[in-house]
Image (tube, rainbow, N blue to C red; front, side, top):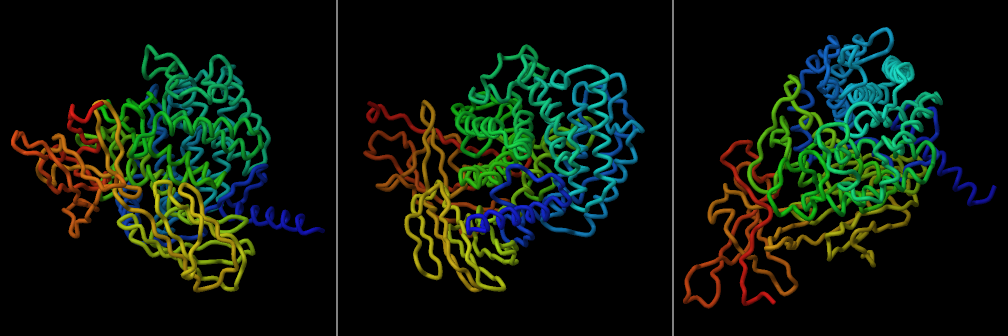
Length: 630
């Protein structure tokens, strides 16, 4: 057997072992394996760990799971979406458990799964819709989330009852569609995208059972997408997501084809089908759509959508926008980007995740982790959303943690070739090397307060493998050393790959460019200020002048603004900086505008008081000076 063949066999073996360690008893080997796999175990400290711990305690553990199960006992619904809440909470709780396996949470998860399964009817249905309205509105959408929750439980604890219940639920859905002789793409809302997003758990079921009926059903769903009645998610993948269909007469009805959250959920399922089939058209459609969303919709803080739909909003972000940045959209954008990062190992997906996570996602979470805003403006107030469906929470409170807990096991990931450092957060990360050693990589950093990161390795024996470190696209000046020796030719927006024999005690130091950057948009012009991955904002709590007053930044010769950290930030604010600005004096005698040092804070802290007293602004209006205009 030649060396190339040996290398191939080892890669396959390692890939299979990694897949098994993450997904348990997966019976079908994917035709396309991921480039990156989550860490084996993680222990984090610092800024992000505090956010995760708050949500773990005050949202995941505090949820009344019995209340989420209750609607399934009655089956009297005709139009609402109570069915989604259990699965959304459960899948976020499963991610939280993978991050920190607390026995108390396991007890909660086991009990609520048993309680849900107890509601399953003899024909396999788990849902809350009355018989005469099954398949309508949000019924299949709710079934999808039940399947995802049951499969998450199975993957965690290998309980055959969970897998069996998910199978019976899927079988009942397929049987009902056949018996009623209806197309799934014509059921529910938003050109069938809500209903056909069930593609994701159907693919996961096939991978875990090998039952080809599920693969056939998955392919049928995609075929129906491409019909004249469907959302045409493949055929229209080169069309702007906000322009794929005419503006609907009913914003919330079946003909609405721009619904952001549901569209991305379908593409998540399509990636799972791509892994199983290897059909490049599936991957291409997702990648093209992701790129279009990034280019036309995603704003400076990493999210988008108005009234929950795509609207070409990237170019409108400096203006007031109605019901902006639904948290369900924010979390699902992170989840879709995480899928693509796993699949490709491409740094652009990690860049996008970082931008959204630190800004749009964390800004929507209440500081104590107990609640999540439904919408997040760029200027105004951050307020909690209303309760939905009599469930004591809304869709975004349920969705936020699903994005939040994707991060811990993807900060550092493993592959058949080595280790990939995707994000920067203090903690220890346990991974598997290509030769199946358990390695511990520790990060020491106060990032993103500063741009200094130290990585240290501990492993039983020396081993040669590739260690990749992401150089963020925003970092114009970066340095990377291994044991004090500089790594040359760093490229912003790509990974620096270091191939060498590694041993315990090896140390990697990364320094990133944290100078204040200015982005200009709109007419009349507005500016936004960034520092590292963070978008900065003005907050009324920081004092005068009024946050709506026109001010201009003072920049150096290279166009950067000097940002001086505030050593003791105000209560409720994580990071504050002082920056020099000029402002209008209204005095004719002054040759130059007066200057003042103003305080900015990170966008996640801005207005994060959930009361009407706190106003904030990201995009800062600029003075128009006719003497400077062409």
